[in-house]
Length: 374
Ligand SMILES: [Zn+2]
Image (tube, rainbow, N blue to C red):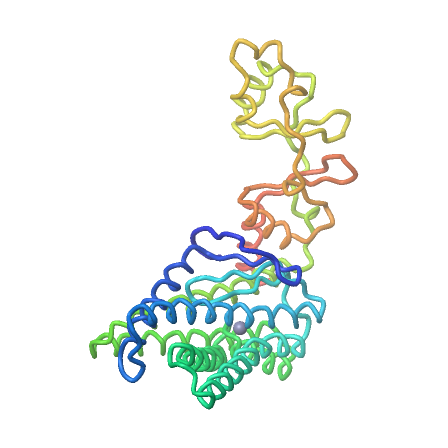
């Protein structure tokens, strides 16, 4: 979903935490903005103190975002929904759920946990600020805490905006879902609110820019991103619905072009690669799937050895992520292909190859089903 790559920074409570490269942009921007602010009235810190405070405040702000996401993840896990990873990126944080919640109650608890964490953090930072002021500590130590209290309060409030997929939008969806007993309808309405909130952000952004405040560009980008996210989450739900109950074995192709392990590379090139123009063939002997041979494997072998090298010597073992079992859901197959960036999966049952499922097959099926309205 996120553009550019990410780097893993560690594992907390069994959840991988990674930073998307876009995060560094926002980290730099926030640090610079804070450093400049700290030099002005009423803070008037020295340039060096401002920079140190800027970096510390930025870091603690991102720790706050991480804690917000960890709270979502923790509640999700308590309710039996494992979280794969948390990614920090330019617009904050996102916790990747392995599946959607089963009922409105779980959705509500998971959604509200993040903003509650932010409000609690605002309170804690506010109390620290208050205590430090009473103790009469140096401004350099005190200033970051009032900012952290304000930033966390703003974070909690913004996330409670009732537009799906923001947390407030998820709370709204949970309520609608509870009311209508219909997840699709609830998602459609909540995603509509999401697009409304997105439109409002873009409008505020434009007005700010017109009035000379360049910070408005940020709101425009954020609104654009939220609009995309709202549309995508509704589409994904519709997709899941239209494929629900369909198993891989119902849509797979049963006639698969396979090769025997005893063939030479010469034979496999002439009789298979050139003839069918596929990039990869499963290697099968007596119904048993032994591995796969790809164009890439063939290119590794010097031309003059093609007649004396067999498929068996050249092939790769079949990797787990390229196979799927016939009883698996079609949605799972589609998600696996998207995740692994492949166009097809081999359908395997007890070590034997029973078929092939392609992305094109599934997409055609969705098209037909949508056109027929079934
Ligand atoms: Zn959240």
